[in-house]
Length: 212
Image (cartoon, rainbow, N blue to C red; front, side):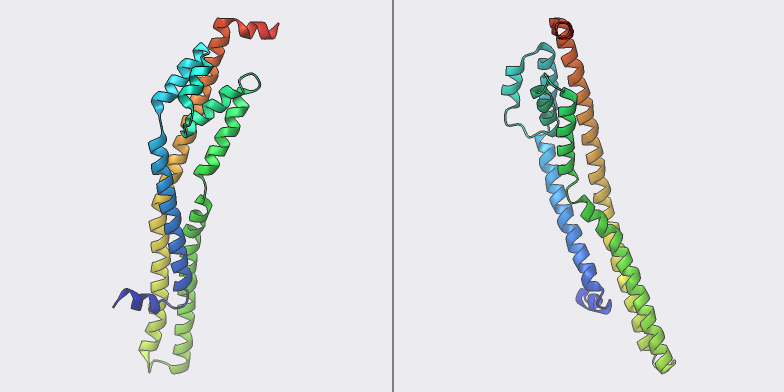
């Protein structure tokens, strides 16, 4: 039996299941490319250098070193430095939220496909069993193939729905783990920057001057 024959045997609900699989695949590929690109942009050495320069108040050097950087951590640090005279913590929090929104893009769609696909499979199961009982009621046991056809339809849709959900849940969990890791790193470096800036103010005496 060919793939097309198996697809046809599942009945009309195989079409929405196919749509779910294509949507899930599109999101997985797009997010995989996003995280691959994000990993290449990460520059932990530069983040450490920014913290060191901030502790010495070398803002011009920071601007030169971070110019054009697309690293999410660097962008959070730069946002805090640019607003250091107002509210460094709030500025970094706002930038971190913007970066997290980019990381979470289309994740809701993937979550929906993981949830909906098995439900469509179950719906196909119910419809297939209903069809089998109708045939059984009309023909009795004189045509067992008609009855087993409805059962086969039920099994195909169930297997398809579960297969889509199982294959999508692994990348979904992986992407979520990458988001959690990125959030942790942004929080860690943001806290380190605030401490570095406080050290700079304490050394230069600007913090005491601002309070008086």
